[in-house]
Length: 63
Image 1 (tube, rainbow, N blue to C red):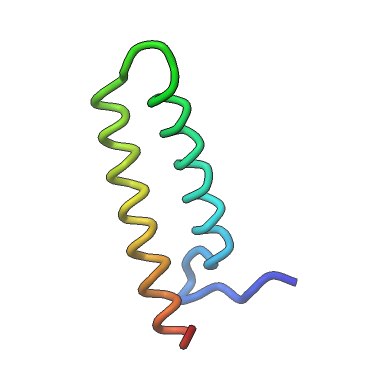
Image 2: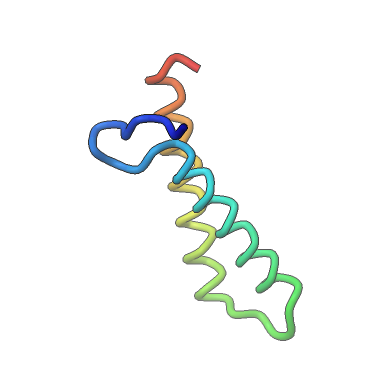
């Protein structure tokens, strides 16, 4: 069973899954041939935003 949607937005599980996917993409870029610096910077920015959003939702949910 999935958790209910929070304020009509993505569930914590969905946000965590997206965060894990960004981690994998970032690892791939960092460990791959060449460095896609602008792309890497944007992915890291999105990952940080997700982490902050997840933390806010967890606090709001009491855990």
